[in-house]
Amino acid sequence: MDLSQDEGVIKEILTEGVGDETPKPGDEVEVHYTGTLEDGTKFDSSVDRGDTFKFVIGENRVIRAWEIGIASMKKGEKAILTCRHDYAYGERGSPPKIPANATLKFEVELFDFYEKEKSISDMEYHERVEKA
Image (tube, rainbow, N blue to C red; front, top):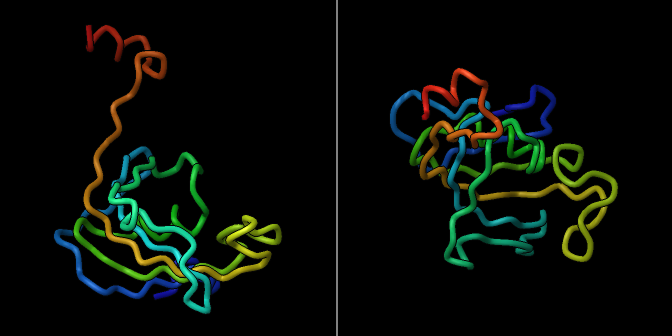
């Protein structure tokens, strides 16, 4: 499934998720992942560390392919995201493990997503009053 409309992010579903809901901007997601180069060389894995990875959709703290790919997943879904270099680490790569212009593959499992609770400093005045 071409998620980017230009074959930059391809998703292959391994295990279907449940329900119809997918994460939206501002939701915190919790995933497990294993990242490999095209030749199968593993460069990172939350599974190996035994700790899930969390980030907020839309804050651009992860590669663009993850913003697109994980936002398309349902709870419990497991998929392989194939990420062209311009949706991953680009022309620079991420030395020493990820070379320049590398297409990456991530096996990703979405465990959960939920609206991230705002910190007091991020709240509008009326939200702070309601919370008090």
